[in-house]
Structures are given as structure tokens and as C-alpha cells.
Image (cartoon, rainbow, N blue to C red):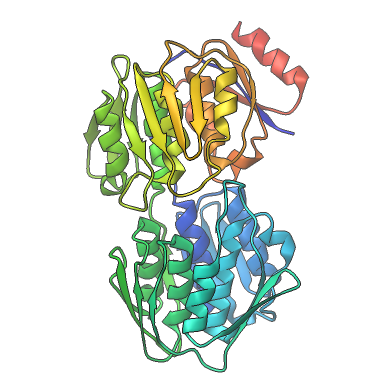
Length: 430
């Protein structure tokens, strides 16, 4: 099993470039099968989640051609099956987007119940409610969601809770339904907007993405398109908080600053200097950071995917901070690992109370999920001494070239796969 070994204690300094948004790419690559013409998509991140999804799309019969590391051409004309294999679903939750895409195009789909990171309950009842409203018969049989319809018809759908996945899945199915669909209480995240823009580039008629009411006029067919994925706001945010936690000075390039406003506001509140440019942000921390309270909320609120990163940063701030997680109930599993590094963090239900400490010290820790894993790497970079992070397979699901990008900022971090390599790294860095 691969691990990261880190010698911390040095500020991150320099420039780093952010790749395409994983969460947008997963939905867009799935939506690409909805036409029988070739679709070219670029700025896709080269991470394991994307590669697993492309394999799943290929296995159902679509033609998937990797042009280069960040560009793929997909043609859904050759799809021979609307049944997705469980092996793919158990690895990445976003495979469930094939439900909306296949139901929209073929009026039938069979997709196993999803897996992914264990960060808490993520029910898909809102997805199923939306499909049923569009006229599909939906049932769960032998561990799979089976959906079919003679025809999909537009409907007025009010989501009981804001759900990115349900918004995107319903939007895809409704794009090829007869008549008009209105989704109220829709998710407003940038990747929802990106998926809508992509569908529109293929001939769909979707208006209002980015607001809480999305209006869709169904079309009979979709056509060929070329599209570039939006920059990844979570990857950008991770480097922003890495700069803050290590008291560094980092320019993060290829970003949309508007998408980062919730993070920028918190960084400025705790004492960082944040400078915005057209497509970049610079974060510097010249002094010890201060406390804050933060609550995760749907966009444009503070993202749940950034909660572990701000949590780690606040362990080194002065005073007592409170972090409240309102999206997922199991997202503080990194707290025990931080405690091993000397953090004072106490979790009560969906709240973490963090008493800032002067320093963290290196330890052997494990990544419990994707974002918490990245946050623990930040902790290792800020800590004194050597930190070994196990189970980095989670981190590789969503961060391309993570250790190389950190090395470019001056971090002493290596990916290793044996105790011998860990000892060699310790000997080399002294």
C-alpha cells in the first residue's frame, strides 16, 4: 500500500496550478453518452475516480478514446447495455449519474446502489422522487436501482433538501423528456452550472442553473460538442488552507475567484492576506492565525468538502474555534488522527470544538476519506518532524499529482510503498 511520508515545519511558497473539477467531470463524462455523436471533453483531472468512471462507461459499450492525459472523446452510439456493473459503483458513488443519463436517452437504466467515501448517510431518495415525477417506474431489486419509462414527461419537482446529485441526475433525465420541467430548491454549486452548460452545448434547453429554480424544456436528441471542464474549487481551496496552515505564501492559478468566496472570507477572518486576480488567488499568512466559527452549508455557503481542511488549520490558531458540519454526519473521523499529532479537538455530534495549539508534531496517521486525507497531509506539512499518512488511495481519488504539486511549493513529501523507503526518506531529510 502506498503512503505519503512528510517532513513538516516549513512554509509552502510558490505557485501551483489547479486542474479541472472532479465533481463536474464525473457528471459531464456521464452526460456525454446521451448523444450518438462524438463528444470531446478536456481539462479533466487524471485521478482514479475519473479513470474508474471512464472504464464503467466503456464497459456498457460506449467508445472511450483517451486523446491525452486531460482530454477524452466519448461516443455513446455503441452502447449495448443499460446495466452498470457493481464493481464500478462500489468504488465511486458518482456512477449513479448513469441513471439519469441512460434513463433520459434510452428510457431505462439499471445501476447498483452507490458506494464512495464513508462520510455519512447520503440517501438517493430525492433522485428517485425526481425520476418518478418524470413518469419513470423505479424500484430497487437485488441491490440495484431499476428505472424505466415508456416516455418521460416534464414535471414540477420540489426537492425536499438541496442535493447536488439529485439536481444533476434529474436535470439529465429531464433534458430529453417531453415538455417542461421545473426543479425547485435546486443545488446551486458551480459544477451544477457546468453540467447544465455542457448539456446546453449538446443542444439541451436548460435555464436557471446556479439559482434555486432550474427550468428545462425537453428536446428529442442531443448532438456533438467540445467542452472544457471548470476549474476545481475544492482543489484550489485545499492549497489555500495549506498555505494558511504552514504560514506560507502561495499563488493558486487557474481558478474562478467567485467560486472561492466562502473560503476567502474565512481565511481573511482568521488573519490571512488574500489577493484576487482574474484567474488566480494568492494566500499568505505572516502571523499566527486567529479563531473562527464555521458551519458547512450548500453553495454559496462554506463547502462540506473543505471542512476538514479548515479544521486542521484551526488546530494551529489561537483561541477556541467551533466547526459545525450540517451536511454529512460522519465527517470528523480525522479528529482522532489530529489528536495523535497533538491537536486539542473534541467532537460532540455534528460539532467540533477546537482549542488552538502552538504546534503539531509528526505521527503515523491514516486517511479516513478523500478530503480528510488531504487535510491530514496539510497537518503533516505544518507539524514538526516526520508524518506518515497511510491509505492515500482515498486522496488519489480526487487530487492529481498531489505530492508533486506540493513539492513544487517546497514541501518535503514523498510517495512511498515500503518501510524501507520511509527509512530512506528519514535518513535523507535528517
